[in-house]
Length: 114
Length: 111
Image (tube, rainbow over all chains, first blue to last red; front, side, top):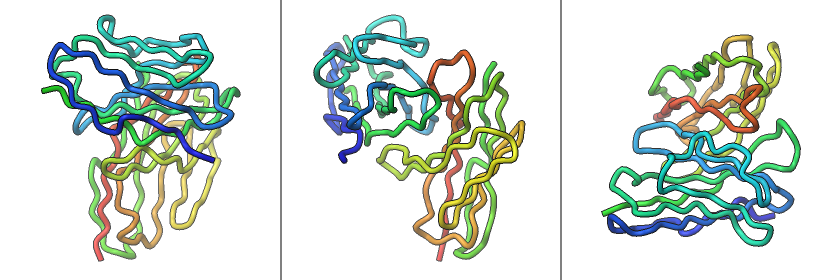
């Protein structure tokens, strides 16, 4: 049973380019969460999605960031016009379609903006 | 404001020297407290979930406990392979399913 799969593991983008981060949840999981970890800081919640729905995006920056979880395919976190401050590790987690269960994390995508 | 504070920030132990990590929280309506382990360059690895005060869970050399204001992660006779950052997170009423994380405790166990 494969865990949460994220790709790419490492991504380098120049300032102004777009970054697309992908996350495939564990089998049987329909809830996906994105978190960001800045260097030497803790994990910060960004967005919570279920299939085709954004449930909570209270942690998403108002501009340039968007997320989706389509009926088919992986969840995508999209960052437009990246800036140096977007450099961070982005983690995806998934959980089963039940309340109050643990979330399992992927290995993350490390985004570097040059 | 909902908050999770972990202490100490860093802890250095000798192999076999038992100790405890602390996680204090201020949230309204706790719906679960979670402990994760994170190795450098890796994603958080789930360890425990605690739901109510008085609850305890164990796994190998680790034991997690919960009160109404804090949780402890006790490490008994640690080994070098227990070296990692230990993260505490809470889920709370009105927060949907999101987790609020503490900044973590970096544990180093030396032989």
